[in-house]
Image 1 (cartoon, rainbow, N blue to C red):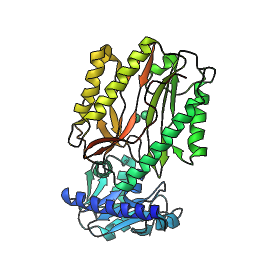
Image 2: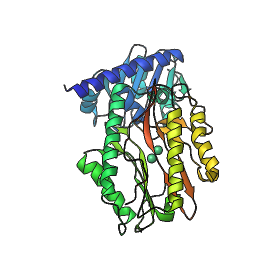
Image 3: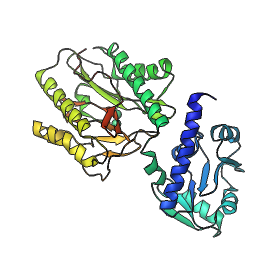
Image 4: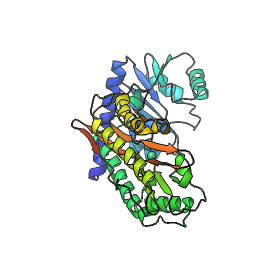
Amino acid sequence: MSHGSSRTSDSVLNRLVRLREELARRQVPALLVSDVTNLRWVTGFTGSHGYALVTGRDAWLAVDSRYTLQAAQQAPHMECKRLTSSGSENLAALITETVCGDLAIEADRMTVAAYDDLRRRLDGTVRIVSQEGIIRGLRVTKDAAEVDSIARACRIADDVFAYMCGIIKPGISERDVMLELEWRIRKHHGAEVAFPSIVVSGPRSAMPHGTATERVLENGDLVTLDFGARVDGYCSDITRTIVLGSPSSEQRRVYLTVLEAQQRAIAAIRPGAAGKDVDSVARGFIADAGHGDHFGHGLGHSIGLDVHDGPGMSPTGENVLAESMVVTVEPGIYIPDWGGIRIEDDVLVTFHGAQTLTSAERGLLSL
Ligand code: ZN
Ligand code: ZN
């Protein structure tokens, strides 16, 4: 077994310990996990359908015949069980055999139809109780193996941005930039894209989440790339804005405002800091520069198995930063009919403060 996979399996074992501690804290005797991302986090199994059941004593993973071999390989520490069909006819019987007391479900991750079906099949033998955010709450703090995967995804993003600086020029379309970027991630790095890449240029850069169109890049354009790679299931998420040709004084001024806001926010990150306080460091700086109305979204979010893996820093959130969280810091200024500038980096919250995981050129680049 390679060093990497044994570390991953230690990491998964440790998650089971943390999950059991959290179940005990919430006085939940058993949890049924059905959300595929949470299933992957708990078990290491990467298939598209299955159930894990975790109690203080038992931990099993039930999959249908498509996945029995894969489950045994990927989740050696779980007791693997077979579902008789993808409709999970015998799931209720497996639960009744294992659970004494209440069964918690992931109320925020289960459809009403799946819940009704399960309740009907259990037929009163086990009482179902709703729980929300148990695993998502645990997922927000990363272990060493997870940080390592995210850091590798960040290095790919850095490389891809440097590569794209040699591709982007007047005359190329947003869509061709996007295709070239995603090709580089997949072909050169053997990774996957973390989410559909954002490429917006000129006045379109004022749309924070615009998608690439056939618009052809022109001299004087602001061009924003927002993309990420996925390694071992873990995402990076980076944004850079560049200028084609020499920047105007307004482009330069707005760029430096966003960059300074970002750097001040990163400097304010530490365990125990409230997300909204870090957000207000960036937001206050941008407002003082006269752009208070031009920064509408939150400062950042947690990244992990999902690109939006949990709360990060926003004006209204109650999230408090803790050691081993990985969050984005992405202030932006978007001016209608003029364009927009966003700079986004991924940082690990450490005892000493923020450790930046993405390191692509952050100064204003003119191509
Ligand atoms: Zn992004
Ligand atoms: Zn982001």
